[in-house]
Length: 322
Image (cartoon, rainbow, N blue to C red; front, side, top):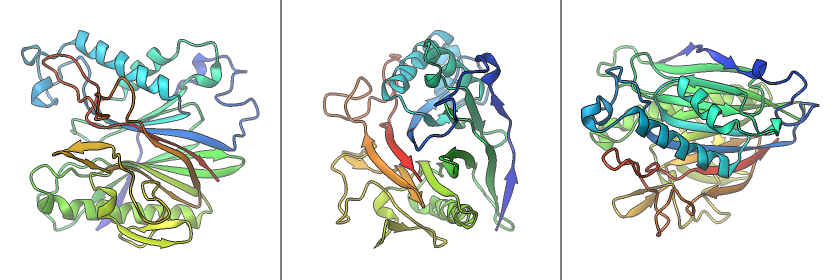
């Protein structure tokens, strides 16, 4: 197995802002940042390109530009309410949708609240990918996908995005993940999640060797109790490949929160996550109260037929420092 390193287009929109404006402070130095992760659930735009999932393929399905606009505004209201410096989203169709989000979120005279930096990556021909909205400059960015020799039937998988930020003169590497889902069978797809876990472990090891802090986030399609729990110092999870990281889902005694990020088959799953290494996670929250939840705190998934709902995942947030 080898890792193929790819680069996608980072488009920085700072030219649209006054040159004297700063995303966080005019010195450019921040001691911590807030990060939001949210799987938006098949968030297609209002154009029909033929690559969409069946329920979004044409106007006959009930999907439309008007429904997209409403759904976009609705999701943007959640991002605005949670008010994080960096927003990571999964299951977005196109990079242009990040600009759509930015337009909905730009109605402020406080330049520190503007998401001036955006990035999107997906495999060629894939229906969905992952994106980043950031108030802080993204200093370096790369995209890492898996290529497996001699293994037929490789499914479409989202690459891992590596984005580097500066905090107090130190470097933080943010890894964005959306691992292979269990659709079609958990056991049949397990080997691909294993490979993605090993890939992330290697990338984390590389960042630590460079003296960078690490925050990995995303939809791992693997609930936190499926990872190897092993408490040692600040770390409480050992990834396949050997990287030791910390997940905020676990308390000091290895217990789990009573609320997860994904409600499936009558129980909570903890598949959306933050993993840290050489970095400190604080104020971790799974947001089970808000317009995006039902009365029981479960996520209100989006339904094309009615045009109602948000996502089948809850957003999670944290603060990270080095």
